[in-house]
Image (cartoon, rainbow, N blue to C red; front, side):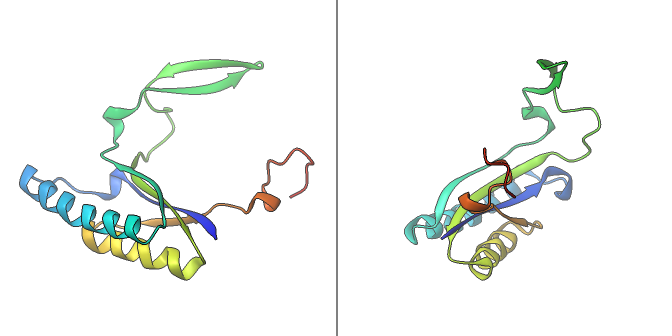
Length: 126
């Protein structure tokens, strides 16, 4: 099995009333429950936007330097995500499609590298 990140950016979502958000919440929870029942959901969360950013951190001269809020050059903010463990790209696309349909928001799918293909492995292999 392979892990995938399915995510949307907050900027992709227009303004919604509380009632509209409530309806989307019900719709997406049905998809999340389906993912759980099929044993593919690793983790998910939503409701993220610029207001939920705690801090940014970067390395300056080998030391962490923290600043409030998002990194100033970032134009997009993660709005929500699901991490799934599925057989292949087609299965990841299936779940992303269900989320996009339930939320009526675009979704982006990223495949995590397999552990043997981790580009940050200690051996330096890519």
